[in-house]
Amino acid sequence: MSDVKTSKFKEFINIAYKIYHFVAKVILYSILIILVLVAIGFTAYFVDLAHNIKNGSSKTPLLGAYIIISPSMVPTIKVEDAVIIKRKEPEELKVGDIITFLSSDSRYSGLTITHRIVGIEKSEKGNLLFRTKGDNNSSEDSALVPSKNIYGKVILKIPKIGYIQYILTQSYGWLLLIVFPCLCIVVYDIVKLIKSIKNNITPNKQQLQNQEKKVIDVIGDSNQTTKKEDKDDDIEII
Image 1 (cartoon, rainbow, N blue to C red):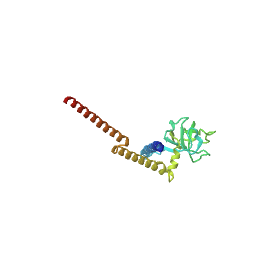
Image 2 (image 1 turned 90 degrees about the vertical axis):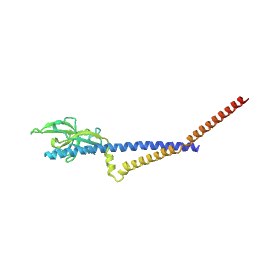
Image 3 (image 1 turned 120 degrees about the vertical axis):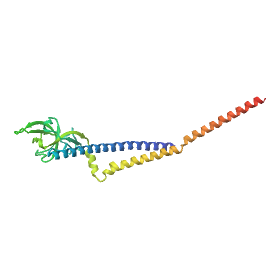
Image 4 (image 1 turned 135 degrees about the vertical axis):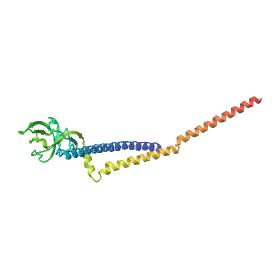
């Protein structure tokens, strides 16, 4: 009975290791993908920035990323979601687009806001002005957004990435999300490799039993053949 319980316990541990191994890999690959995207974004950012400086242009950066801390765009964009924005010319923007901009609204003055365009107007000088509203707000923003205040249009949303950012900024974050999972995966793979080597070098009990059975069968067949030959020899002598 104890052997059965031990076997079940080992099976349970093995399944738990496999599940943890899978989850840890998913987390690590997710972080890796995010880092790759960030690296691509930074590369594009600096290439564009260098081009603008060379040409004496004062354009906003080509790409940007922001963590949402307000529920004004719920359910489209939730708190702790991240948004990736891309610079757009004012003429390219249309009603329904979600933009990130420097607000002059009395409620958000001086803050960077991400809201949806609900109307487009023109100033007396012919410059485009954008009326905005949060999807979760009951009223439109009180101030129109001039083109120069717009950082870009939202092109991608990454859900809940803000939580990961918060954890990584803590002292235990890197240990919890990166170092510890990597260490566990390495230890698991080492243990698995050692077991594989042992199985290849030292046959297990079942293999030994099978080999012994084959040897016994061969010896038995040999004895039967010898007895048969002896019997045939006796018949020939008679």
